[in-house]
Image (cartoon, rainbow, N blue to C red; front, top):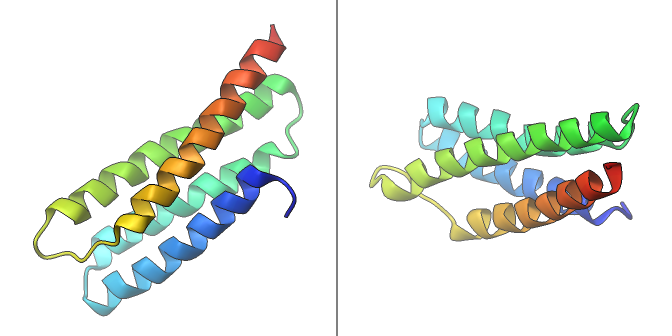
Length: 114
């Protein structure tokens, strides 16, 4: 993938899939399911934005990805704070990277949309 945002989103999703498998191996199914849904939805919405019908649609789809990123941040925070859950800090680092790129693109697109 040449698009840096898509590339980072895919890399992040693959990291999350491994983490979810670890959670499931430890029988943490509810949180595993929530993490998998929200984290992979980030990349799915970013990919969907690549074929947006308009600049407004593009921004809207990226804003949905941003919301999913914040939800994922919440689930990660719970896992990190809970003694019963393992957590790899590199997941939060990668999520932050994706969110920074995502927000920069959203801001740029909004400026260029006026």
